[in-house]
Structures are given as structure tokens and as C-alpha cells.
Image (cartoon, rainbow, N blue to C red; front, side, top):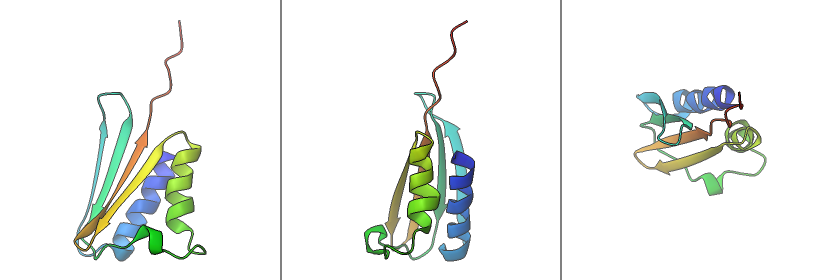
Length: 94
């Protein structure tokens, strides 16, 4: 779920992310809950991560997909941003 995926993104930022990490959450215009985890580390190429290293794939991306949301990872030599989006479920009719 969103909380567990956020925890894993924060754990990665602290472990690999350099000296500064930021966490920001908001409710977007479409009422989705969006969490951003940003760090200032050296970045990484997500496509180059070996298949047996499943942390990002399982603990973040797959977890968000299973919850009906999405995860986006943007990384460069100056840092990484993980964006987690979870749409709000439809309101129950009265």
C-alpha cells in the first residue's frame, strides 16, 4: 500500500540518497493522494538494476500497482525522485 511503498522509498533515500532527503505529500486536483520522496544522491539507472535485486520493483512499483496506484522513479546524477500516486476510491452512495 501507499504507506509501505513510501517507507521503502524513504529507506532507499536514506541508504543511497546522499545528504538530503525530502518527503512531501498532497491531495491532487483529481483527489489522488500523491507522495514525493526526493534525495540528492548520485542517482541510478532503474533499467540497469539486476533482475534479482527486486527492492524497487517489488517494494515500491508492484506494491503501488497492486493497490490500484502507480509509482514513477526519476533519477539523475543529482538525485532521485520517487512519486507515488493513489487514486481515491469512488465515494459510496448514500
